[in-house]
Image 1 (cartoon, helix red, strand yellow):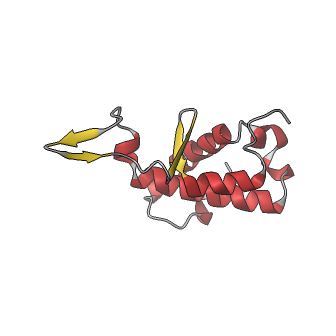
Image 2 (cartoon, one colour):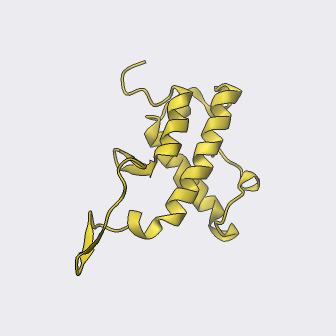
Length: 118
């Protein structure tokens, strides 16, 4: 895990914290094409580690705050002329992982999200 429960400062209840950290780390691994796993978190620079920890925390909060929408199989929702959808400029979907553009921007700064071969 890239974030210790003691480092988290958000609204997620303590009993859910460890499972949500694990899920967020798996999502971050997917967004970085498992390059963190390959290199080893401890072998990354302090700068990269800091960005990854911040990204995990922000992604956890994003998933917690938007759980109903993210877990829904619906792509769009409309009742009596009122519709709801994500603002595509504020979210990023890579593979099956949806996160905020803020999280993805942090991960891009690590250099671990490059889509080509390294």
